[in-house]
Amino acid sequence: MKFNKIYIISWFGNGNNLEKRIRYHDNQLDWCHKNKLEPVIFAQNYKDEYYRSNVTYIKYNGQVLRFGEARDQLLKIFYQTDDDFAIFADNDAFLYEGSKYGDNDRFVQMMQEMDINQFDHVDCFYPINPAFVPFTKDLKKHKISDQTSWRMRPGYVAAQFFVLKNLKKFYNKEFYYDSNFVLPDRSILPAEDQEFAVNLIHNGYTSFACPNLIKKDQGLHNSDSTWSNHDREVWRQKCIQGLTYIAKKYDLPIPNHNSSNQQWIKKMMVRNNKFRHTKVYFKPNTFNNLFTIE
Image 1 (tube, helix red, strand yellow):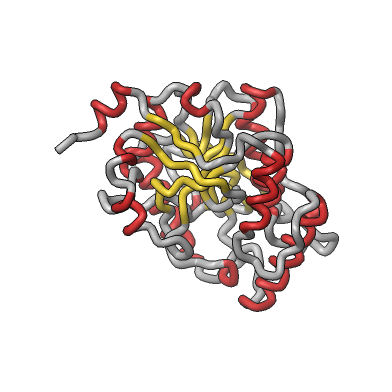
Image 2 (cartoon, rainbow, N blue to C red):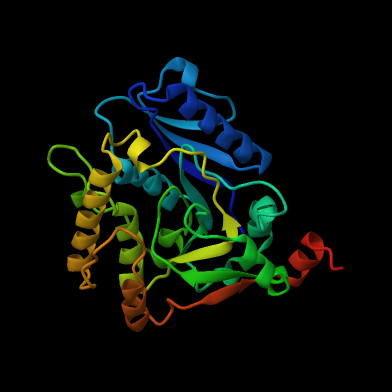
């Protein structure tokens, strides 16, 4: 499979936690190079000292583009390639390393070993966030079956770190982020990442959470974001506004909180028969090369 790039949106903000943000991003780049991924970075208002070697930069200076606007610039580039899948990420997101974290250490190699037809039913997927989803007991429970497949659970998030099929190459379709999540005053209406995935599902494609992969949380949260100076309660209320916009746009139940809404999943499963719990099975040679059976 043609899978060797990670598209990263990067803006270090106006000074808050600058050293920490740069260090987290350097950790991410170390992970990319260790896994032989080619970083393509949409770099907003970078100073000369921010640039690193062995990285492709799309340099941008001017009014700061928001999440979706910046990601769209990278999606346009990706859709023009012959790659099958690519990773899209924020500038501090990658996967934990170590044997306790599912298939994280061999994820990139396994993707490259697989055939694209093993992903006929998978268009977008993302690792779980251990800050919200416990994983140790789950991995232990599925230890045997996970030796031959990845589990895909219906989900609808395209944020921080996700893997996307080249929709232009395989379906002659291009999906982008909804511009309505950037308000006239340039502030952000949160949940544009969920709208992107819901839009995929609404149009007959699929999005999944993969519990075999665990995202690394380096400690920065929404209230610490370079994109917003809101405190947590204000951010939570704005998230509800964003989710309400999605609900009205796609005729889904109006949410009363900003967490994952199982009612949405159930309704989308009725509308899209490909949006189901499923598995991606490994090729026999991939299984033999990457696992030791005891």
